[in-house]
Amino acid sequence: MTKGTVFNIQKMSIHDGPGIRTTVFFKGCPLACLWCSNPESQRRDLEIACFENRCVKCGYCAEVCPKQIVERGGSFEILDRTQCDLCMKCVDECCTNAKKLIGEEYDEESLYAEILKDKPFYDSSGGGVTFSGGEPFMQGEFLISILKRCKEGGVHTAIETTGFTDTELFLRALPYLDLIYYDVKHMDEETHRKVTGVSNERILANLAEIGKKHDNIVIRIPVIPGINDSEENVRKTAAYAVKCGAAAVELLPYHNLGEVKYGQLGREYALSQIQKPEHTHMEALAEAMRSVIGDRDLPVSIMKSL
Image (tube, rainbow, N blue to C red):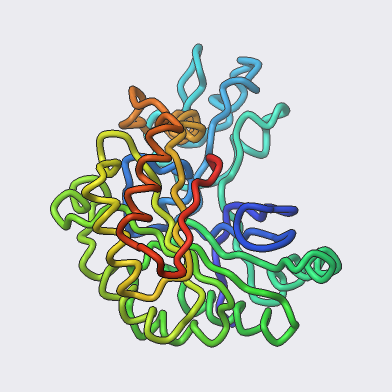
């Protein structure tokens, strides 16, 4: 039986599809977006987060660490994470939960059971389950397995994906997907590679291919000031959305709510100086997209920061 690694299961979610939903966040992503608000999703491996605001400076985590890689006398951060073998002593012995393991392994049965707990809410609200990440297709076989199980159980299914995956794998998942949120970061290949670490060629090619076979694709664009918020870029995205038969486009304004997580994982956040875009600018971008779409049935909306 295949297993998957999940870092969060969010109940009563209302932003990731219709109705009341459970959003399952898979661990691992092939992209390294500079603005990523879920850095705990980036690596497939389990990892330990350190919450300085919970730490009472007792120093016991440093004492029990077999590798002696926990800083002493200050923040009690893990100094060299490459040496950490996840023995869990610092986590298990912390009385204030200042250290926490990020990620949990599920098999199909256990994850499905967790999803099914809220089925009465799905049925009464028209909701369901949404698989997000990270990139769910990094755990493609497990994803398809749990999608199939959900569909057999009458649970509405959705996915939020970067589209950076094997085309055949994506096509295998299509029969079990009611709704696809498809992230498009930038239309320029060079810029896309610079700000995400990968080319957009596979992403755009997959969108074109999936668009031929699925009629409920919502393109999501994270609007990052100074990176992809030009009218030229959103116009090109709108034209491509029309070409691929998208059902809707959603503009998501940048926020820095995930910045604190980088410190908890011993990483640096690259965009700490960027401010949230003004609503007037978001409206201008939406209007620029609508001017390209014309009278076609392709709504463009501005979402609240997720």
